[in-house]
Amino acid sequence: MSRAQNRVAILHGVNFDVLERRDPDLYGGLALGELEYRITGWARDLGLEPTFFQTNSEAEFCGYLHRLSAGSDAAVINAGAWTHYSRAIGDALAVDPVPAVEVHLSDVENREEWRRISVFEGLVEAKISGKGPDGYREALGLLAELLGTQSG
Ligand code: DQA
Image (cartoon, rainbow, N blue to C red; front, side):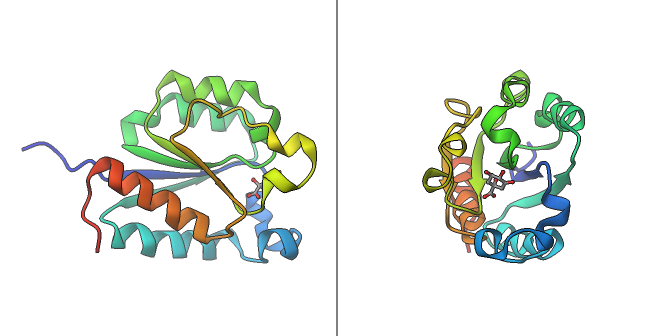
């Protein structure tokens, strides 16, 4: 019998290790561990099995993307500021892609102009921003539907 397609990688990029120290008006004051705890609950309710990765190293982030399909069937990506300028990371996602949703805690469409650009455009199923942690739940819902996992 083939394995369930339910593994979802939750990828956080630069500065998410200090999420609780960033502007609470924009990012909610949550620590990454708390965010990951919530994501785990939402994922499991949808029949998804999450794995988490965060790095401040662009090279490590690219390296993870190069091997994405080996460990995951789908991905939720919040690459932080890299989203807006790292063509290298966009190219890396194209190397070994899985269905992915781009998420941002803050409303990147209504902040500085440069935050409207995303290197993931055309590479992801959807882009969700400005919904805080709930954006991750929405992203997981889209991916669960795509993968056909049980929702509960
Ligand atoms: C962010 C938005 C980015 O513009 C910013 O650089 C971040 C966080 C968000 O989740 O709102 O680091 O990705």
